[in-house]
Length: 136
Image (cartoon, rainbow, N blue to C red; front, side, top):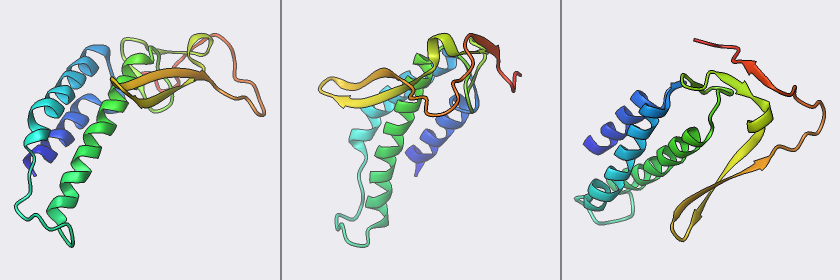
């Protein structure tokens, strides 16, 4: 439970709608430390897999850490504000450079990120940079 609370607190502090590069770097460093130092020590008192809530929560915690790392890495890569993410250090939406999806895959060396252009099916989005509509 304590590690779960630590992960939730980390997400709350660093990965809310308003983000910045320095805070994201701190979050990534913390996630890597949790994965390296604390997650391997995670254990359950009961070893049965059937009806074992403690075991299920341990599995969920591992997945929470993976998702937290994915969101952090993708947020660091995207140097703009878009959708539900406002980057204080990159306050504009930049369709010229960032009208693309960030794809995350598990590779042999860990998470691999790449970008792919969006597929426009109806109306093309405007070009250029725009002020983020929810600028803070």
